[in-house]
Every structure is written in structure tokens, then in C-alpha cells.
Image 1 (tube, rainbow, N blue to C red):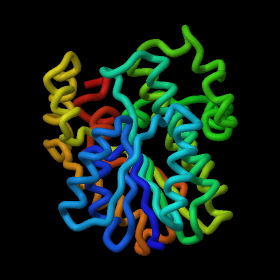
Image 2: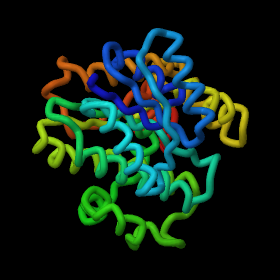
Image 3: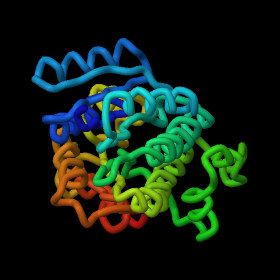
Length: 276
């Protein structure tokens, strides 16, 4: 059997990473609908990759476990790319928390139970997590280590505590990076590594919709005022993921890599800062 790389959320970023890390391995591409999973699988199969498709709802323990079981039936799971999620413009607060926060914790837990020695993974988070004001040490620890099934019951995530969908998204993405740091300890006991990438605005069909939606002006201002002066591409995220998942990244685990073209720097010290 071949080594298996599982891509949860095989959109443009997930596929770009798969192209960088999937040669010579079996790629299992999972999306929320069977149709979109098949489309992603066909695109990579036409490019010469050994690939299969699956449907998964990352907010369901049974669904994620079924994906784990399918992956194990194909071979040793040596790679995990988790790029699934919803944006602040796509869903209400409770859905964002259940998919982006709980769903990510679930994927990390269940795949962390079976990841092979020498394996590695990346979670695609967001620059938004870096713009959330500092939490208390107790809140950080709670987001990082609370058992998955108790996570959404945290006081800080209850109605009235989470003010809007952007706040829910920022909390989820901060939680993702903290969760990965904690999970890196557990994955390390299996001889495996896990890291987070926090991209800025990456041009995908979803991002293009956002640029033309109610948050579009803010998105365009971020692009125009950041140090790089442009948005990023899925292939650039793929380059970083390939480093983190490959042998050149063998000393990196439990880390979060911010790649936003300097947007967060501009929020703290540049034209996007409150002082400016």
C-alpha cells in the first residue's frame, strides 16, 4: 500500500498543497459535498496523481471518523492537510464556531490518533487570528486543551460573549493555532509533526466573492496598504506547506506561520493601525 495524504477541504488552497506533497503517494481528497470532492479528484487525476474522493462534514465526529477509516484502508496516513472552513460572510456565529473551531479540533484529534511515524500535517488558519486582541492565559489554555466535545461549552464562546461573525472567526482561528501547538505534543509521541499556516488574502473563487461583497472595501484596503501590495496565491501557500510537511521542515512543529503580505504588520505599526 502507498502512503496516504488526506486533504480535508480540497479547494484551491488544498489542491495547491496536494500538488506539492502528493507525488508518489495516494491522495484522499475530502470535501463537504461528494460532487465537489469528485471534481477536485478529477482535476488532480488528470494531472497524473493517484487520487480518490470522499465526502466529509468536519462538524460531525462520525463523519470525520469515517474519513479516517477510509484513509486507513488505503494505507499508512503520513500526511494531513486541513483546509476546510467557513468565512465570516458565509455563516452565522454558531456555524463558524462549530466548523472552524470544533471541526478543526475534531480533525486534529482523530487523525492524531492514527498519524504514522514520520508523518506531518498542516492546518490552514488565517491572519484574522493574529488581529484578535490578546486573550488571558486561562482562555488560551482552554482553547488549546479543552476536550473536543467540551470545547463549544466554554464560557467565552457563549451567546453574548461572541459579538459577531468576524469575532467568531477570529476566535476560531486563534484557537486553531493554539490547538495545533498543544496537539504537536501529542503528535510528537507518535513521531509526527503538525503546524499551522495563517494566510492573508489568497485569491480563490471565495476571496473574489468577498472582494465584491459587503467586506470588499476593507479587503481591498488591506491589499493596497500592505507591504507587498498584492494578494497571495494558492501556490504560495503550497510552497510553505511543502516546506513544513517535508524533510526540510523536520525541526518545525507546533508553530504558526503568518503569511499575509504584511497586513498584520500594517495593522500594528502601519497605515491600518488605529493611530493612523
